[in-house]
Length: 115
Picture 1 (cartoon, helix red, strand yellow):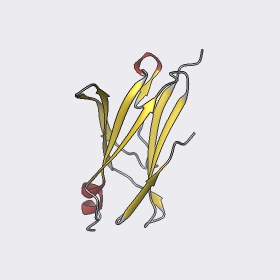
Picture 2: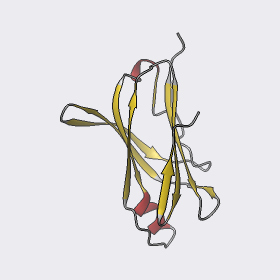
Picture 3: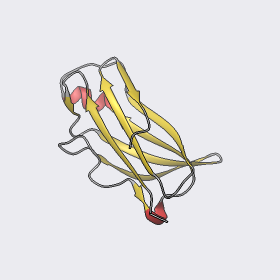
Picture 4: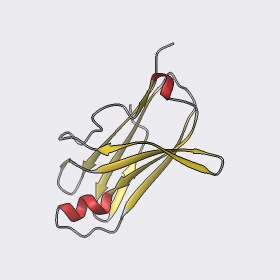
């Protein structure tokens, strides 16, 4: 069975380019606990530089990926509406590739399960 992985990237739709240097943090939710698994910043292509989880580290469960949109927009001398953007999702198949993209603008965002 192939090893699964979790990846992400962020596109700044106002600028029409990758969101470079945007901070993110990944949490695992289990019962009433919220454990931080990793954190980082997007690279020049707007992607996490490595999979957030992969192989044996990718376990079934509920996760939350939080993007620091407010800090990112402040770094561009912008004032946006959103501060932190949490995206909560469920992993069921540890052999699958889960990709969580974020399309970001100062006053809106969207996400989907990518490939």
